[in-house]
Length: 91
Image (cartoon, rainbow, N blue to C red; front, side, top):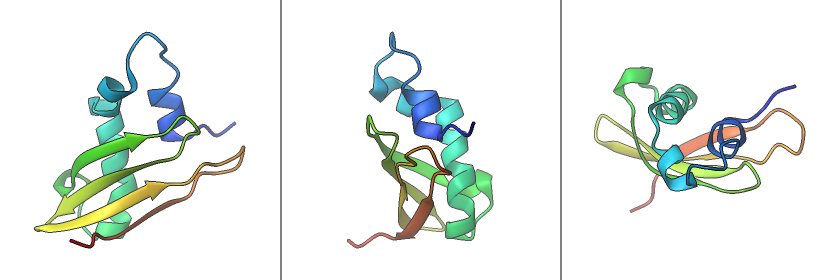
């Protein structure tokens, strides 16, 4: 069974707040990996900020690389493979 990043990492632990889990190194690394294909930058070159998980397993975050900011999102899977996307953020 495939478990999405936000649901698996952010919501499994009920004793830790979502805000603190959203910025954990494990979550940040997974978001860097998922962002890399959209930003065109290597995983380690993506800076992740503004992580906003939602209880349904969806969420948004910003990936910044080479001074360009991308708004990224994960769609709620409803039992299927999660979808990910990033686009240049509008100022």
